[in-house]
Image (cartoon, helix red, strand yellow):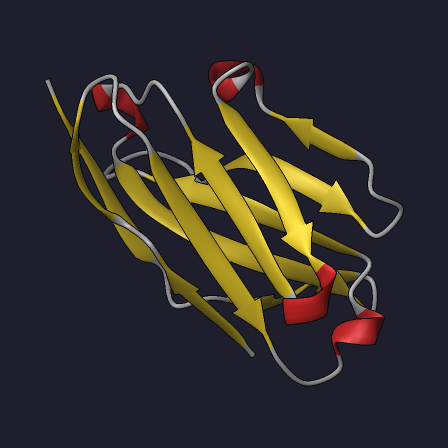
Length: 114
């Protein structure tokens, strides 16, 4: 189970940190990612962290977003800096295990005002 928190309303140029707390068979998670979906847009993967520690972010957020993990808390984070209005979306964390993105958070709204 994945539970997200940390969304909200922020002005352009501001920062937010999203959290994704995992429970259950967390040892089986091969990767955790953050996706986002804006109205009338396709879902986009913005950041991923593999179990090895390797991370990657989408070009649209490179240099602004960072994904990290606190292993002791089984919690993953998405630090979002220098937010832009086009970052407005519902953000979801998702866990990759058993060969697919099988676990999803409930989603958290991020709104960036200009």
